[in-house]
Image (tube, rainbow, N blue to C red; front, side, top):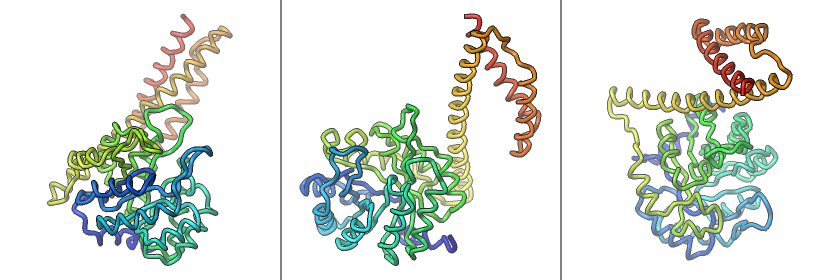
Length: 360
């Protein structure tokens, strides 16, 4: 994407004193509900009022949005509060209606991003628009697919582009609704530092009690903003009740978040250091998680060896692993001494696991 700095210009032109904030209900339910929430968010840090008009659901029968009538409610939001408006679009018909109702910001959802055909259809419908268009990451952790969607929009002469990081689906049970896979967002930032990136802690966590921590991590990683689902009565929301916060809670979250400011060289150093340390914390947690998974595999090997009465230590296998890991380490700038110490410790822990099973 040539001249990618153009993509950040729309954000710079806003001249914000804080990260971009997009907030509002997961779904527009009634005109009264939409307007009540919007008025509670008026005169806060919120820059765009979001609301789902069309809701792609995993299975039919669930609430799938009020449809086009909700766009008129968003128009009233802008008229009565002055807040700019935002909604998700999933096809050409959605785009045409959203543009007709002068929606200010459009985003492409995770389910749509997975399909190049859908993204291309939306890009063609938006060709040359001056609206802001954001692309949520695809459901699966596929950076190329995510960037491919952005490139299709950029090729359609849409310059006000950005992305939304909303986490990724996994079969494994974790504390997150969608695991953050922060390293993918970091890699995207590294490749395209001028592409604005917004964090979606609502869909990452699926739990309003975790919104603050994920939001803080995102800001520590230099994300440009947050999109947070907000409802005056979250427990009775028609969709995604558990992850929505009240306007009052959102205001408090924005007050409590530690937002870094660049004021001088010392501040810049501390900002960079905080960013790097946040990345280290994320990677360390991933290392521990991977080591835990490795030991579960070792437990399975121990059970199999016990069944067949096979010795724990297999010297040829161990020497082959060690040789391969030294070579792999060298390619990644790791010293042989470090690789030896690390894998000997891992191997010893694996032996301990297997011996425990064999001798039980």
